[in-house]
Length: 147
Image 1 (tube, rainbow, N blue to C red):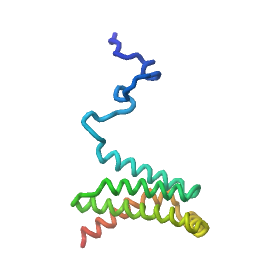
Image 2: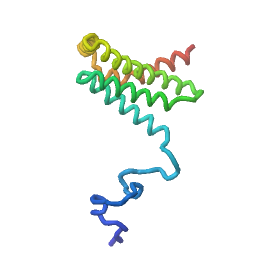
Image 3: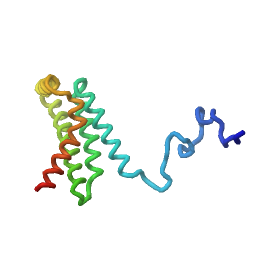
Image 4: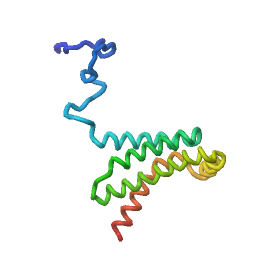
């Protein structure tokens, strides 16, 4: 038989400890702040979820895309690598599109909505916003590679 652990199963469900570091569900790095990859992937997920909301709430979707992809582009700053600069460009352009959507929704909601309806009739908005950073990244990288 295996030995019992220090905590029973019920302690994981009904845990009243004051420190979250002891729970196995929320991993915390003991050596300091989270790394930049967490912010990169978190920003990417926030941006993609904003793309899914475009037909429902353009102002919320634009804000999520601007914040998420902007956070992703911000985590890539300070590198002299050509591919990282292409990634920053690829995520920066959709962040600007998200910010422009929020501004357009505030100043002229009918025009913004008609643009979204036009794009929705001819393209898949969610797939376009999810793939746009990567396509722009590859285009910029190949342009810089062959230039």
